[in-house]
Length: 175
Image 1 (cartoon, rainbow, N blue to C red):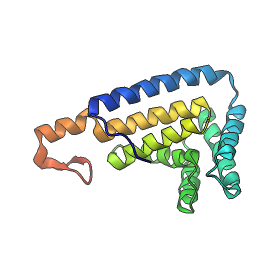
Image 2: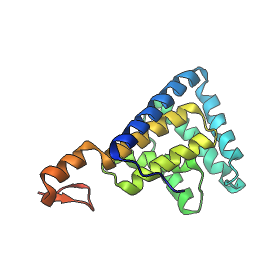
Image 3: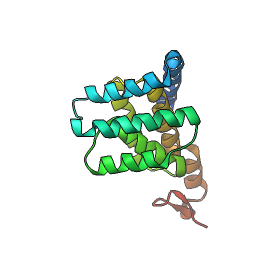
Image 4: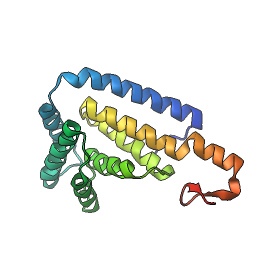
C-alpha cells in the first residue's frame, strides 16, 4: 500500500482530525456492550477477504482478550504474543496487526517512519474493513501517538539544536 507523503504539519492535522472523528464514533458506539464489541470484531474479521479460516480461532481469542483489557483496564501480555506469533505465521488481519502494534507502543516510546506508516496502514485497513468504531477510535489514537513520536516536535527540536547528538537508529539523544 502506497502511503501519501505530506508535509509534517498537514499530516499531523489530518491525523488529529481522524482521532477526533474516531472518538466521536466511539462515543456513538458506546451503547453497545463489550460482548457485542467482541462479536463485531470477529464478524468484521470473518468478512475480510484476506483472512483464511485458520485465523478464526486466533482472532476470536484476541477479540476476547481485547475486550477483557477494555473491561479491566489491565494490559495482557499474552495477547501481544498471540498476535506476534500469528503475524509471523502469515496472518495479515488488521485487528491482529493492531494488537501487536498497540502492545509494542505500550512499552516503547520511540518510533520511526516505518512504524508510523504501519500504524496509519492498520488504521486505513480497520476503517475499510468495517471494524467497530470503538476499535477504530483507539487505533486512530495509537496511530496519532506513534506518528507524533516519529515526526513530532521533540525530534525536530533535537535535530535543530543538537544535530551531532541525535542518533537516528535509536531515535534518541546520545550524550
